[in-house]
Image (cartoon, rainbow, N blue to C red; front, side, top):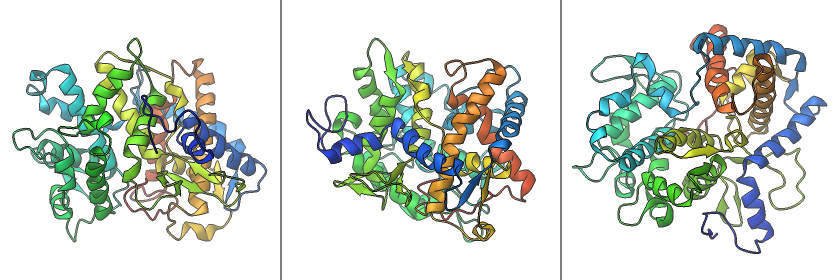
Length: 423
């Protein structure tokens, strides 16, 4: 596949496969394909899930109550990796001062993008047994916050850098040389403290290192770094405006090769895209459902460093919700979705199973519909209350809260067989 000057796939006359790939890498395709499955759910024609629309208003009220508890002033930040660096009443970025302030603004943004990308790629579900005790504070964390704090301290210790005199960066050589033993040590993993998908996480970061070298227009040529994306986006921004969909498409194109064992179309790894048997197979990719969960989560996490540089982010609400187990668990635990076969609660399901594809698809449609309910309740619109703030305010916290109420340990209602690269 070739990229034009804007980093998009294809040329003047793309083939059918190229057109299908470009479509499947768009937020519109996520909404189109998931809505097809949602329509089947409304007709009670899905294999695994039943939809109960009468439960959605109460779910919206529950989420709204959580939002108002969490952010009584209504000032809700983006749902992004930066929030996980701010747990326990302190921002870990404050630990980088005053050294960070000695760098120019552009290098500060590059550093933050290096940090965000490596941290998000390490963010897949940790499992219920893993814990991380923060050096210096002794505070114990688990799950997403634990992964965030562990990745932050790994980054600042230079784990992803090949230059000892510049530890606060991630570069191609440092990432490709990373070993499972190094990451296990940094994340305090041992037989009594297992982390799900450790090998998968290492492989993902190693592949990131290799991929950085393949896209010099995105990542630079002398010392390829994720942070050089900042330079690329500044270059293509028009009148200091940058579309959120452009950021996502760059991420999907530049990081596409890192995802393991995914569906391919015309030799292109599609990433977080999965077939579903009830979608008609009428041509290139017609039976596929794209989610791009980690890529969108990453996009949301890269917007703040770009805003700090003075860029205005447009088209924010064209991005979708995040198809992961906290948002999805919310709708199961609140009774909006139910499994037709209760035995499916007893086994773990891989991400390519039709059950998980259905669950994730319904979740994304329900997030859009729930957002409409909440905005109407508050008399706000999508510009003043974008989906990324509802996720933060919001559905992710509500999903975690009700999971903790329903099950000891706060496990999701449906078990996932994760390889450390999807959820």
